[in-house]
Image 1 (tube, rainbow, N blue to C red):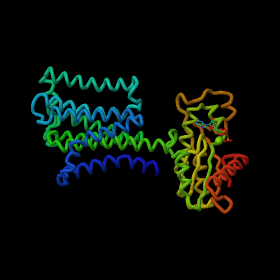
Image 2: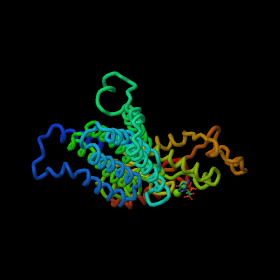
Image 3: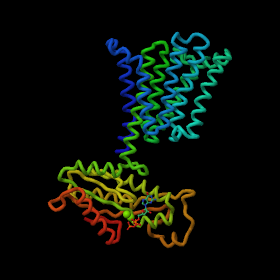
Image 4: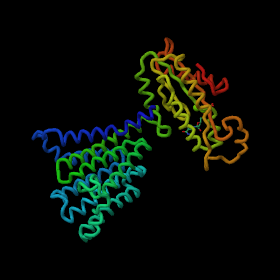
Length: 409
Ligand code: GH3
Ligand code: MG
Ligand code: MG
């Protein structure tokens, strides 16, 4: 549920900015004179803002996206301000409308690797190669190549109207789709902003002659990227990298915000050191992700956090321990009965130790783990969240003593 909500949150900022862009450009009266400069300078302002954030937080992919959008804007200013009828303008327009969406889509699928290193140099090389190719077309004037790009393959009206080359329409549609998928797969706001930037660029490209509209939609695309840098950074600070659930930092804020009626549970994976020794650290990580996903689905208004290592915390605001126990039991049972498939390289050698463990967490077809749970609630004796956590930890210790895979309070 939380995962779904988080996924639905991805497109919010790009959509709001796009809608605001339409409202500003097409429906509002002209800006007051004192603000007239804003529409002209907005791409520059958003570019500087975005670059400052992207460089400040070391987001190389955002730096490149902003560079591409700024190049598109500059190219329009230099070569398209008088329309797209001459050979040179046609060549630049085709190059922009094909390269920009494909580049943004490409950025959405490559990993973050910074700028000032050989990966950044390679990426910058790809960018320069596109400029060099366009410059060559510009100078050498291969009319047939440009005509080829503009030829119309499909003729129903939406594809024959307008000035976008059909190859560019394809690049925009494909690029948008790739970036959207990348955003949902990686849960990355930056990728969602790339999809939004492709959409905004498509609107701008549709009106290359309309200066204010073009500038506004390029600025909108840059603003999406800038905000996404902040959103992803916030997410990194408050979410655990491995499991994707809220981190210790988020727990501390939650604890500070609690009233005086709540329960807290501590969960710890049983014999996890042995599990790592037998199956390796990588499969151990897979198991932690699985366990975290089960804990995050806890009902009863419980909020799950990774406390650290193989320990998790669930906070139940406004609940007694008695209220929380059935939900925690459900989590324990769901983890106990989950079988994780062993695939390919993950499959361990048939070591003596693995054999010895048969019937433990190693069952037929796949592996499984169990968790022990300690729960405590706030009361007269346990007044502060830290004390309740310590009591839950002592209860957890008792659950381990009694044989593990159980809940204690
Ligand atoms: P117990 O049933 O008493 O909890 O035994 P245990 O082995 O789980 O307890 P212990 O706290 O000694 O071991 C915790 C182990 O968890 C140590 C470490 O190898 C493993 N661990 C902690 N964090 C990670 C992680 O991020 N990934 C992996 N793969 N293992 C981790
Ligand atoms: Mg532990
Ligand atoms: Mg443990």
